[in-house]
Length: 97
Image (cartoon, rainbow, N blue to C red; front, side, top):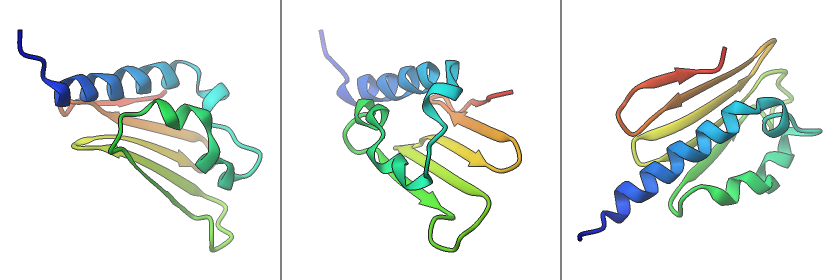
């Protein structure tokens, strides 16, 4: 049996995002946006996952967190209403209502 480690990491990313999106109020709200860098749930993403946060330095009212692993992504927009977008390993997009 051949194990595809890249595919295993892609599945891990998607599974973790599905878990996070099931309880957004528990994972996606922070006292301060800078707290995102120390969020425990970030550690569960596969090695090689990249995180970027915009809107922290300029005193913006709206913020955006983008988490990427290869072609997969999780985009969390903090504007008037929280918006969460997930692009899975198949290229399909999933939005949090």
